[in-house]
Amino acid sequence: MIQVNLPNIQQFMPLPYEAALAPRLHIAHNHLQKGDGAGGEFTGWVRLPENYDRAEFDRIKLAARRIQQNSEALVVIGIGGSYLGARGVIECLCSPNYNLKKKETPNIYFVGNGLDSRAMEEVMELLEGVDFSVNVISKSGTTTEPAVAFRFFRKLLEDRYGREEAARRIYATTDRQRGALKNLADEAGYETFVVPDDIGGRYSVLTAVGLLPIAVAGVDIDELMAGAASMMEVCGKDDMGANPAWQYAGARYELYRTGKKIELLASFAPCFRFMAEWWKQLYGESEGKENKGLFPASVEFTADLHSMGQYIQQGERHLFETVVRFAPDEHELVVPRDEKDGDGLNFLAGRSMDFIRQQAMDGTLLAHVEGGVPNIMLCLGSNCAFTMGEMIYFFEYACGLSGYLLDVNPFDQPGVEAYKKNMFALLGKPGYEELHRELAEKLH
Ligand code: PA5
Image 1 (cartoon, protein in one colour):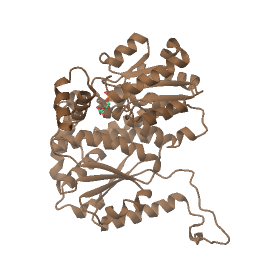
Image 2: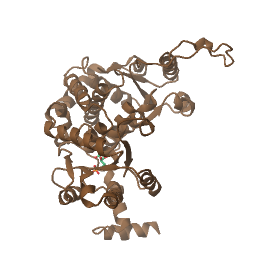
Image 3: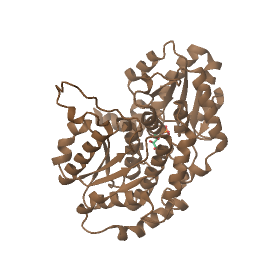
Image 4: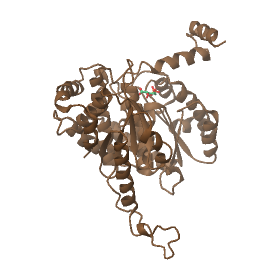
């Protein structure tokens, strides 16, 4: 269960807002439930936890087992919604140091999420003498970054194993029918998984997009889906008091309306970094349009208290914090006693790290609220696959509601096309000749 604690926003609100906002949340909620709002054709994720394709789910588990058996590494090629969720879940549940750990499961390398030659070469070097497979993920099947990376890694596989075995080691997650990747996969006989038509990239982590890499890392994907299903029930409630997604979406909308333009997602767990990256894409791409939308940023405490803490405490007052808090771990390190106490830390001897972190959290919260930063606290269960499923669904649902409260389409991303068009033109892609001339003139 997720609890949304809001006492530390009240003093920043001119008036109680819940009653006024409830009718608008009710409308937004109905749009999501019925799929009849803007972008309603992309609300397949709303009921996904109950009606996902069971046969494909079983194939994902089989493929994951095969990869675990025949590969020491899996290369995941994808960008944006086609990799952030998987990376976030794996880092959160298995550690940001997953690849360095002793384990039974393959290393996982994420590539194709940029255009840096060095980064790609480095992964190629790491694969020398290592059996590996590739999961190439692109809904459109035409995105430049993953397409270019796939060329390199396909060649590496083919040179290493020959075409036939390479084809057995490539798993393509893409559109059911369309796109260059789908055609390539059909022609070469790669095993394919589907990104459903009615689910956009940033809402796709609970489809094969996220599930295959997550399963390869050894995470229990049944538990992940069970967590999402349980949150789907909760978020289906047409009631502010019982629906945490309503509470979160309502509070952040009201803060935005009263002048807070930046939402800082903060966590005290370093493993959360890539979940925060996933969250930034989800909210930034869903809300940031028509000159509207909170700017989603993230900080990692306590590390960033020593870098961003000054600004948060005393900089421009246009931000609020949303703090994600997991329930304490069962096995906590306890500070040892030191007879000499040269560092003067014996006052903490016998205290668990969680106790110390809790005091840091409370101290930070009080200081930031005092400094004029409203605080939303999201209390989650322990850091496990079930909780992760709950959290993913919760953030997705609240994001859909937030888009509708803002009166934008939360499921399109027209702005992403602008850079792509220019890049294609500058690269000389056929069909972009006129724009190429126009841009070349501007640049020189
Ligand atoms: O949310 C989105 O739609 C985007 O971030 C996409 O996930 C990203 O651009 C990658 O697209 P594709 O999966 O088509 O390669």
